[in-house]
Image (cartoon, rainbow, N blue to C red; front, side):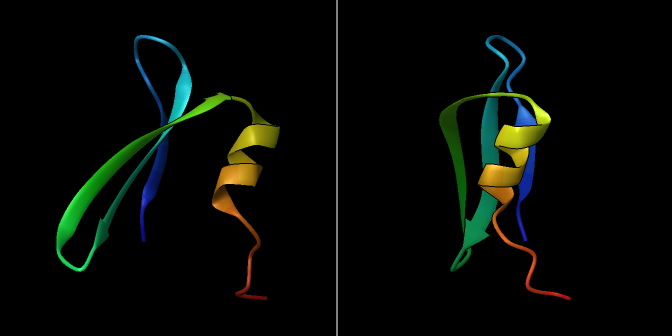
Length: 47
């Protein structure tokens, strides 16, 4: 499971996650708003 947050300097969405024990922090070109957070999060398969 990863985290989605907004960057302090530019307000762009950031992804913070671990993959096979390696930490990745990736910045998107998307601004922080509800619609873009849903895009980054993807579909909810838990239902």
